[in-house]
Image 1 (spheres, chains in turn cyan, blue):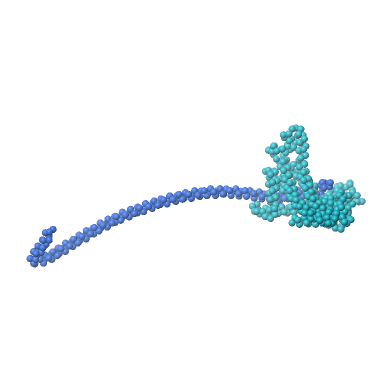
Image 2 (cartoon, rainbow over the protein chains, first blue to last red; image 1 turned 180 degrees about the vertical axis):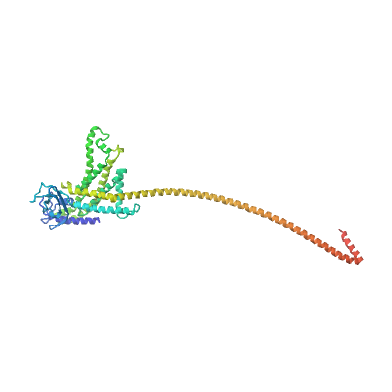
Length: 362
Length: 164
């Protein structure tokens, strides 16, 4: 099953990359790729990788002879000067044309333009478009809701004392694991209050991680905006859970000399914000790295292929093998990162709610 | 680094999505799942502890049963012994009684026999006496006709008597 996925992914990358060779681009390229046999074929690995990782206003699969194989997504722009604009991203013609006074920049950012096509700095445009990350996240969450509520209904229907069946079997050990290893072990007897939040965070990250691994889908959890939101939410949860003891430790650390206290206070205060920031960066970096590595291994085929066809064909089995290997690791990472985010959030909440009995632990 | 610039749209949509998903799951999923899991776990724990209790109860019942059995066995042995003694006594009593009765019956029988014998003897004696008297009468009548013979006879008689 998984190797099939990998095969499909590779095939997808093949078409994806091939067609990108044909893309006409005047931009300066950070990394000059080797010239292919055909003159128009130009390999730009870093751009390809970035295109794979970054958000986009469409689900772009391939470009064959100038025809784009893509699903356009709705664009929603709010501008204080011009109001709300709502149209399909296909109107941008993949960045080639302006529409309703907006244009897609080379970086994929929507800018307001004047009639002559130059950027209009005076008009602020806030982009609330349903980009591919947003759409994919919505779809993943719909799937998550469907699965989890289905399981919950099973519990309601069958009562507590029947053995779990079907998907319940898959979900129950995860839920009990989160409850016992994350909730109970970090939060003690107060764990019940935080369980809905912890479970939601875990499954929210997990489903997006896993769906993001399917070839052709967007890299939702590897987007800093996504992890930023989760980190801010966990920061809020941590702050709302704090007690006087927690703040006492920050503003008047016990058991240290006065001068050290002066140094410790800003450090401790910063720590409050650095902890969620670390959560944000950890998830983001892990997922981005995974996607970059997989894309790199696939792209190696074409880098070698652009040197000579034989090298490309010859290297492909090696590349595929490595990709499969990394894919398995990524499946593991999808679970591990979801767990780490949830667990560390629980640890931080635990620190915030811990009582005076932990005086020695500092 | 555009990679590190959070997009406003995704930011807002993720926040909205998370909040909605959180409340939906909290209302429709987590509460019921967690309570069901808890209920099941406490149910299992209760079942185990009650099983343990029942086991102990069973063990104590078994002990009790054994004690009862032993007691019953002892009682049975005692009863059998008593019954044997009683029966032996009854048998010997019956034997004694029977012997006494037998002796009495035999004694009575002997007494009766003796009485009968005596009665019969008396009767015989009487009859013999009567017969003797009758015969003597007849003889006397006949003898009175014949004097010599009479004397002869008397002589004869006298001779036999004499020897007594």
